[in-house]
Length: 552
Image 1 (cartoon, one colour):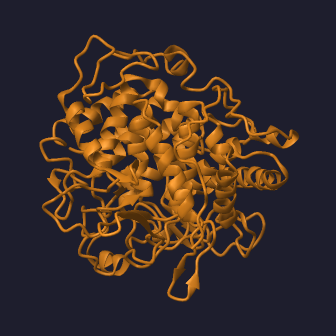
Image 2: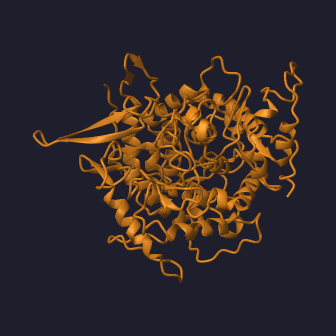
Image 3: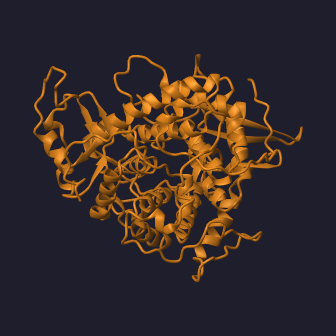
């Protein structure tokens, strides 16, 4: 196994520059070293400018960037006239207890600190799980742990990766890693899991995307471009993207994936082209476009990114989007069309539409459905994919508003008593047996099958702030604060309304804790949104067709 030689401890900060976050096509017209030039984005603009498209929003209890840090005793300081919620201090204490150190440096947080259950792999640092922890530390002015994590996982990427006798692609990032301590030699080593130990032996498609998104968040938060400029980081991004941008038999710009390759890491019928992966792919492409140098090695990659972004946005906005008008159109589809002018391009059989979707679809609102492939549309709602679509501007402003309208209209179904349903609705009975293989953990309204995951609160909050609907996030926050600490920060909740602590949920789940803190800090200081939000690119023409939901 080879290892990269990188300096984890050096700070190497450069002056903060503005990151250009729109019109990425113009990047092809110039050759430049990496700089983070951007238009004034969410964290540069005043709160009034940030929310100007939504004049009905009146902020309360907000403060300016750079305040609201935490003291050496982890006691929150309030920059407003309101006392901080007592849960905040408890959450920070729990988050710091989850820290993992490698040779004296913090490099991540373990998945859960529940001493009442067998560890399994919950004592490892997961790439996707660490993202909310990283954002919490960045928002709190503690970037070093994030830098350490990015460099350590980058080093793991360079390892040889084999499952049985098959070698994985060079750019694959680990799902997780663990620190092993040898007391006799007083030596520590890292052990990574690239899917060879995972349930179903599926490699994590999302890890590389989250790594790029987090690198951009670190750069945006600190103004330190030196980390992204490292040759190792530049190569790491190119390797990740080379896995996705290679040409083959694909006729769609979306990524073909196996079941269990993302947050829903068990068999749940998300094989094909799942919305979570497509939205993360889109966001990672846009982040990489801002971070890659346009040198001899990077220029070709940038050109391929630009082409893919245009194709991907067109495909997703046109074929994954559904609202009342589009649902009615699909209901009336003709089949077996053979021509370039076919309306039903994927030959979806109208009789395959599930009955529940007709009642679920409000007169105002819409969402990106779970999956689209030949003769198959998965109409389930998936929270992560739709929130990332808003934050990455994969969703147009009109679509983003429609997604928020749907959440408000279907609050009981999607939020209930604990935010937020990972997917809706649950699959059950015969369908559950066929789709999940009788998975005892993914029974109806539990875990990935319609369970409620508190970690999704940070994504919902970010999407709410971006769309000028913070009142939705505050309503969800009130629900979370009434239960999370009392229930010892569970991994997930069960039941149609999310009323019950999950039957196999770990307590003191780190990303439940971190997700709460990130959501809370974003509500207090909306400028933090800039770390995880990208403005719409004006060069990507939206699909100009239909939709009564867009007209409101």
